[in-house]
Amino acid sequence: MDFFERLFRIPLDQLPFFLTALVIAFTVHEFSHAYFANKFGDPTAKLLGRVTLNPVVHFDFIGILLLLIAGFGWARPVPVNRDNFSKPRLMGIIVSAAGPISNLLLGILGTGIYALLFHFGVMDPLWGASEPSKLVVALSSFFYYFNMMNFFLFLFNLIPLPPLDGYRIVEDLAPRSMLGKLQQFERYAIFIFLLIVLLPKLNEYTITPLYTAAKHIYSTFFDLMAG
Image (cartoon, rainbow, N blue to C red; front, side, top):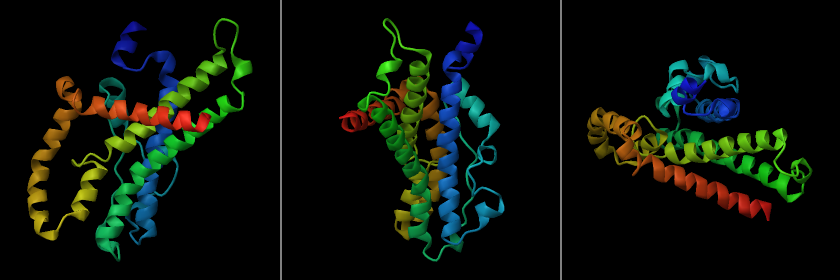
């Protein structure tokens, strides 16, 4: 048991809550990309069956396994052909931003539901004299992972490095004269990205501040909504 807890960074008793939150967050993120791309005239994702909330079509097994083991993973990227858009740059920005924004909205929604449970006293009868009930622990664990994951994914995906959505937004915003330089930058940026997410020392200046910011967003929304 200890071996698996060391292998998978999430404690085994928390794994069901983490995986459920992960499935929802990744699925809605990729669905949002596919939905808006199709809405704007690019049928590529629809033809591949990606305009759906079925998590199976969005998941990459290796990406999820690495997320559990190394803390870094991915879902299957949604293919987008901007040439099919009537306004490629504007619609490209919206399609790229749709994923992170969907995570932000999910985080706000989840925080709101959790805050309401406390605000209206729904959780109060569930607390025992000395320790919380199993239902309270389950609800608290799920909403913690769900809200934190969505707020973190919102921030993380806005990093302007390929293959993240933030880079695609910058690419569509940049003057056409810079596109050649950006394409040259892409050759090396993927290595920069891997170094940032995989090296613990660099994590302290990149991933850790994003995690801290996500916690701050979560607590701020919770305090506001719980009254």
